[in-house]
Amino acid sequence: MKWQSIMALVVATYPRRGFLFQTISLKLQAFRAKNPDASLFEVVHGILSSAVRVLIAKFYLRNCEIGRYVSVNGRPTIGNKGKMIFGDQVRIWSRIIQAKLYTGKHGQLVVGTNSRLNGVHIDASESVVIGKNVRIAPYTVILDSDFHDIKDHFAEGKSAPIVIEDNVWIATRSTILKGVTIGRNSVVAAGSVVTRDVPPNTIVGGVPAKVIKHL
Image (cartoon, rainbow, N blue to C red; front, side, top):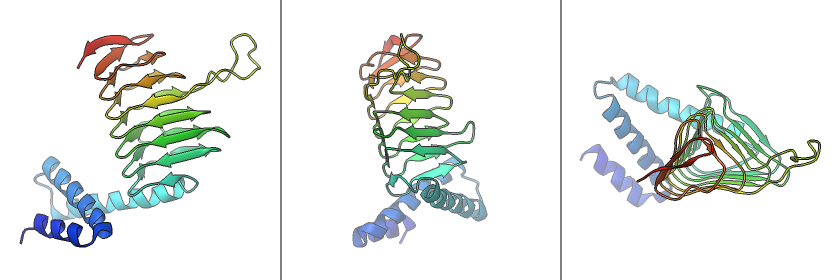
């Protein structure tokens, strides 16, 4: 019996443990596809590294609600005064630049399944909701508040929720400002400043960001 058939049998027989075996199986397939000449040692090392990242995530995100197999790579800064929720298999990377995630006293940050936050700075005074399968590149800044009033710089600024829907890719050095919804399957080009809603299935770019292509 092939190892793929064994994994399928385990998933069917033991649903809870099956998810773990299924995840390992998928990671193993992906690793073999990228590294067809890898030795057994390299394969085992890759799997163990993933396991260690999951364990470390439990420490760094100990004051957050986390799903299964959430992982970190590098040391993120987590300032959670409100609520943070991370779905299954969310990855928080801090290798190129440190990821920094903050919530205010009444703020919430919600990240959907299989999304990847790579060196992003997110500050949720009110609400930042990120969907499934979202990829956010390094040096991106997401702020749902002005923090300072336009006229009185010592007064609190306006805030409004941000929603980033499923399958969005936000490229490096983008800035997402308050009150914005980025539609599913969209792409935000590098260096963009998003001040208005982004329609689904589009590429936006520029300062301020505008639609440059429909997908």
